[in-house]
Length: 413
Image (cartoon, rainbow, N blue to C red; front, side):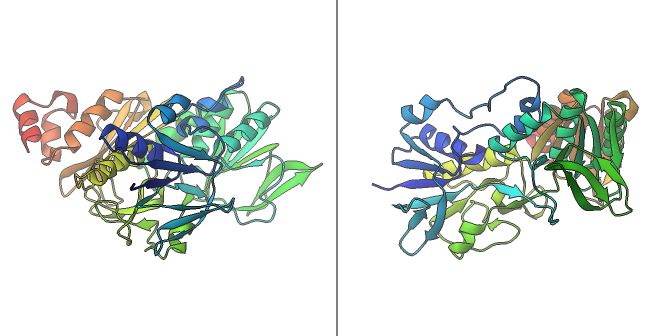
């Protein structure tokens, strides 16, 4: 009987198994996870999981789900190689497994700080439940933390640590936080908000060393010689796609595993979804790689349709969220560095949205503490015909109250 094997038990892999069964797929499904935990939600690891107490990872599905849906979930099953010629995979325990259709949903891995001192007690990366558990334990006795990198994970952790009364310093190589992801208006207000919560930012600095004393981290040293005391260091300088297995199978690699619009790799029986893939994005007009739950889940649903007989190209609108202390950031669409940006509301109110235009057409909306605007933006940006700067100016920059005629025109496309 034809077998589907999924490598990876994150949001993408588990959603695919679920969607296959929902769509009536009645053949064997095996999900291989290198981790020992029941598959869990990753976003809370940098936020709610770091609160005081004894939290547990939130499962993606209950344990009974896999039994009830006849999904063979194998935990602690690290895959070591793929042989496309025989359609087999090898596992670390020496077993080999046949597949008819193979799906790579291996996600991404933390980019490592290339300093010999960037390891040891008190130095952390954050991606897995095991990482979060170690970090949670260290937080209970920490008094001063340094975060290296002002990305989403770093800022989410910084906000969680500051709420617990820990002195937090964020050191960032660039001139502002999240410079590649967000507009100036959003990042400027984020910086003001985080500073008001007690977080110190140091921009345009490069880490030269991490010092240790008495068997534990003690300080972070930057290029100009300044030292920032720390009994806890979190490194968040980005992530790289997990492509080792794809490379072992001689699949095409291009900023991730190269897939077509149907999420098929360069091998007709191997597919890939989630953080590990680069794919043609209609909303960006180019090939991209995205690290988000939305992307993972929606790609899984599209692939499930294809594998059950309804070829479905992946064209979903990208959207993303990040909770950082009092700031709920939500992004809809795909912006670019050359976009024209308009901010109709004073950011200092703490509730505002930034509208991004390209060739006078709305392409993305960043919202801070305006969830209703975000939801409206997702609806408008998903339409084939999008409003122009003139349209939104005439509507008072309130997507929720576009004129009925204009809303109908956008919906009708």
